[in-house]
Length: 116
Length: 113
Image 1 (cartoon, rainbow over the protein chains, first blue to last red):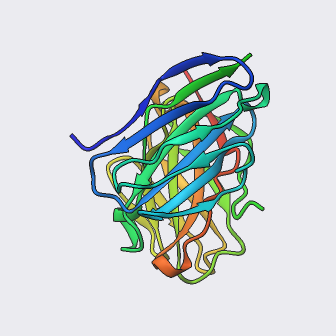
Image 2: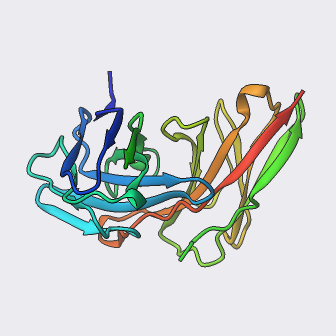
């Protein structure tokens, strides 16, 4: 089954304790992306990657890191989490530049992070 | 900077057509319009997309104006399960034109019994 998986789904942590949220896709997609969602603000892109070892900043990259060492995985790293990073996080993937239906993004189920 | 603008909320009576507008006045010739929806806090799901022609699939219809500066998503017979937040975004057709994706707050559609 084609899917994007995220782990963990729920996480409560404390300020300053490094954490990683994993994202994996099984569709051989080049493009992967991380979004955060906060009430009233919709989805805001954190980072995206167009291929292995190629990453770029989205709209709200401060406080986050990513890596793309393998095509299927795109982990989100919070080196020193702060309470303002409490949010709902989504990972997404798609093909790239084929035009139309193939470029639609598939989203993971979300990770709800609380930083105390 | 948002590439699309949508009304924050809309209501629709169950069984009637829901028409959700989206303004994308700065769209370029090599950008598609995509619509997604998000039910509760689930991951957004693809609905439909288009370049310049009107499109229809089993979920919805998409009407794009001739100048491509706006579009309307039509849910022909809205049901309670269509209550969701609907997002309109634009994405380029070519790899070399890819940039960050901006979703914006979307339109919260409430289907009323």
